[in-house]
Amino acid sequence: MKTKIFNFVMLVCLFTAGCGEQVTNIDVINDDGKAVMALDYRNFDEAASTLLESLFSSGRLKKQDGSRYVIATGRIKNDTMQRIDTDQLMVKIEREITNSGLGVFTAAVGPGSDKLLQDARELRDSDEFDQSTTAAKKTLIAPELTIAGKILQRNIRVDRSKQQVEYYFQLELSEVKTGLSFWQEEVIVGKRGPQRSVAW
Amino acid sequence: MKKSGILLITLMILACGCSKQGDSRIHMREGVGSDTLASNIVTRPVTHAFSALTGEGLIVKEAVTRRNAAGFLELFIVGYNESYNTRRFRYKVTWLDSDGLPIDTKTSTWKAFSATGKTTFSFKAVASRTEAVDFTMDTKKWE
Image (cartoon, rainbow over all chains, first blue to last red):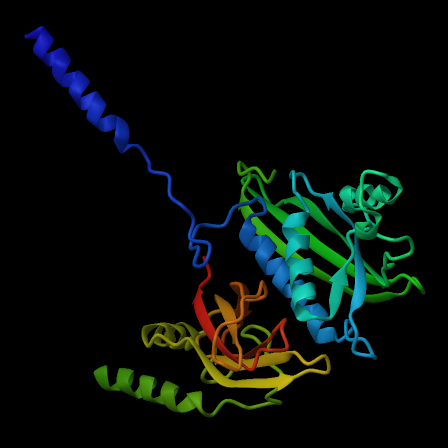
């Protein structure tokens, strides 16, 4: 009798092992998931979209001669309590500016510059490489504009049980030649939730 | 008793159209502007309940497009929130090219908007490609 009960319990355990809460893929096109206190991809998408709309409606990227601006991405400071790769924001911004035909980004300078670009150019002194395929000196194009910014966070205690977290996405476009700021925008993402929710 | 109730409701409905109209561009919220016969401490709960019961919500009055100086298509949506409550929602604009095909752009994402009760609202969307000639817009509830 005891063996039968033991076998039955084991069988039930085996069957129920696969019945835990299932992992599901997020529908990133129509995500109806609840908001979270930390920054999620929806916040980055919305912030990038709002910043881009502001930039494109400002007309500041339109060059008088119809050509494209050469832009360098400067430092995007993460001043939040979260570990954020600021490329989550900047890849969207760079992609849309490039695709708009108004600007082109240089990978030669800036904090995120491509080291391989410099290494590849040094091949011009190597006997191992066909010199006609190496990049000549004075062919890199200097940036005319720089884009830099900051993502910052403020935590505010509402009451004993509630907290408010404010995130600020700030971007600025400046002209290298004059140092003048061409365009600047800020997007605020605010969240209010239980004190026990961790925003980092 | 019944008659007086009907009379009160009739008066309230008639009074809805008799409130003093100021400059239509300026919206004075309840509790800020003067009370009227249609909106006061007595009638307010009834009118609010009636509005909720009839399911008043947002209506889009106008969708205007224009091309800005940089050549990008801009969309201006003008609407009215018929309900007494603030309506929060999300909208997503998809830009279409001359063939009517959607343009893949990062600006086509769900964006939040909030419309105050009984007021006109407007928002703007900008295409990030000059190929955009038309648009479609979808809305959903704020999560």
